[in-house]
Length: 110
Image (tube, rainbow, N blue to C red; front, top):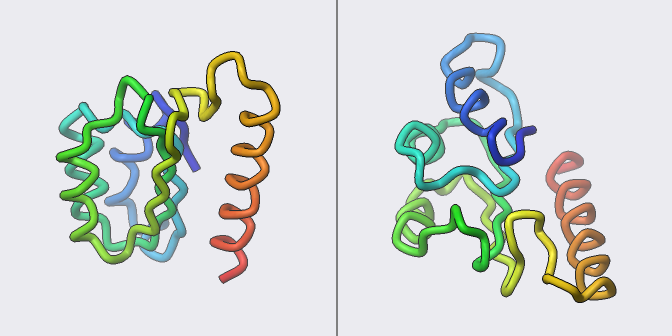
């Protein structure tokens, strides 16, 4: 599991034998970074990918291209920023975090 800057490190670790059967969780990956994008695109591991469309690292074209990797379970959260929150809307942000935790739990248990 990695969030933000940590997705660069995760991208570099995917080739390790010990990660071959790992389930990956990408939270707000740095999609504008080619190494992160290419790692996600070519990943053979099952992955959960969550990002908001108000995240400064979100790119619609790259998000759409990642849909070609059927091993990625993708979730785009409308209006969510890089913290996976809605600015100055506490209750909406709590609801987002609740949904994210539900998605992570379901992904891990599947």
